[in-house]
Length: 375
Ligand code: MRU
Image (cartoon, rainbow, N blue to C red; front, top):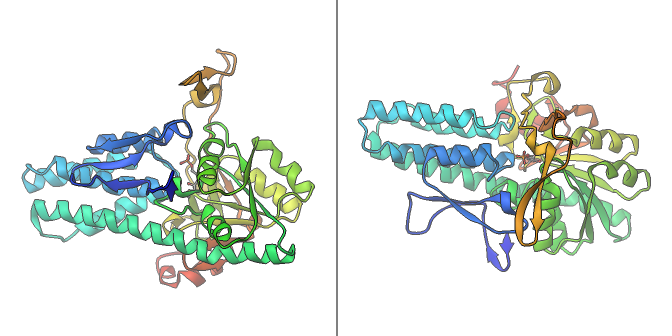
């Protein structure tokens, strides 16, 4: 997407220097647009863990490039040591964040590529770079296609409202900043807006890290999409007063039977949506499906982050980005980063292959090649 007239993806290889991967360091948005160089796997793992990059698809792509950086650092090693370093890199990256399954999917894909590949150390480095690029390109295309498939849902509501504004509520940031480009939840919204459909987005602030207020609002604003930031607890009230036509969120992991893990607070929005007959859609690329587990609530690992994210808030004050304390210093705080929305509350899933019901038959109908792998 464009930032002040210039096109950006969220991650790319530095021009004229293939040993550097560049990212937008999202910790400083919306106040500063900072580009960070990643040159080692340690830096890539920190970027994921400390959320310089975040969002399920982007976490996966960053991990894939992290493996390439690990390989580059080990380029002088004999092949057996080289492979040991690669294994260590995978372990480091795997432990960076537990919920978004895209991380594990991307690492497995890189390791799969290396298996039985006998191109020597140089060849393996090139392979990891090429595969990371392939993964990034696929994620980008999947997000573009999610827009193509999802835009009809917005269009139908617009028609039913005789062209009046379609009000869409979203939670967290499932925008282009969370992916390589386009976003998942935002992709149909951007396309609808570009096609001249009147849309307005209710942006949940998304405590404690405020991905909605900081990132979704920033991206929608840069693209000229009308939006309003609301505190996290406002959605139910808006729905009771017919001020929300649909909800679209992203996902960090969706089991193939339809339960959806997404940013903490998503479940409550889905409950409110059901109570008010508001359709609740989840947009995700296939890299976000978990093909092993079947019970999202029981089986999806939910990240717990440091209590300091709940007890403090970061913002701009007199030109400086500062953290200020919100709570009694001695109170304990719990910081669950995700929750699981049971499939029964999800109207449909929007994927790169089309729209399906949030259940096994719907998902396997779109991804029949997975039928042998599951159950
Ligand atoms: O903790 P985050 O910011 O990585 O969480 C991100 C989300 O929950 C997004 O909604 C999800 O990854 C979908 S991204 C297209």
